[in-house]
Length: 390
Image (cartoon, rainbow, N blue to C red; front, side, top):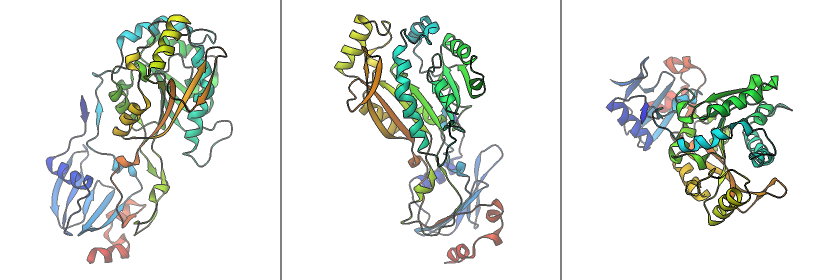
């Protein structure tokens, strides 16, 4: 199931030390170099420890001076592994249901009418939370420059509004007929032709090629249809961008410095789904499917519904920090949705790729902006050199 970069046994021990915050007690160290094949090896030296070709770390008895570039890619765990395409979260039995309805996505009075009206809530929910991560945005195209992955996009009901807000959106769906419908509808708007791309595939099929690519992943009315929720969430984590520092700075004592304020948050995951309660069974399945016919029979399986508490637990355990959970209520009489404090039926969640997944930043480190400063011994700040001599 797992694939990815390999570490030598020594490399594993070194990275284990970093992860457990157990710093060396002597100034001497070893050099950890990265080869062209991204393999790690050890070369005993009395020089500072070298972590990749971009950064240097010096260790000295309970005190540390850390120098590195602003390229935060060095913080990506080398042992992070990506899921193989042999594993799927798609329930083949659900494919038949959506295949039969593929031609009805853009019928605003049909079976997907509740999803059309849900855009009144979920589009602003996504837009407003994403705008919190940027200092400035372009009027009329507030999401310009952002990359969004719409998982289980269906006919593109949510993909298109996000594209009109300026985002570059990739919509994926395992039902090929859904993608054909989405492609056809997109063709009527030349603006969307440039901003939206559709693919007939599952999430796990594109994990490797799109790792750490997206500012946001949207899974709206999707997780109640997957067969392996935890794997699905882990795949979402993999394709989201890591957090990054906003700029280069020189600081020697960060003990009390709020360095997280200088970081751009990691990618966002947006989910809307149905709670697993007796009320959701009575209204979501018995009434909506069997009595009122709001949605086709067999669309939902109550056992796949997930409570906000369980979803939050899965998200947090897989490196995603939950920021918002809000209830959503739908009126079959008016055909409109509204926000609610009650999450017993539908709810929306916003989670962010946690900065806690990166190694902790100790007190007494300094960022440098040029590779030459790191490779040229004479270019090291005199203050750092004096610190190393102690």
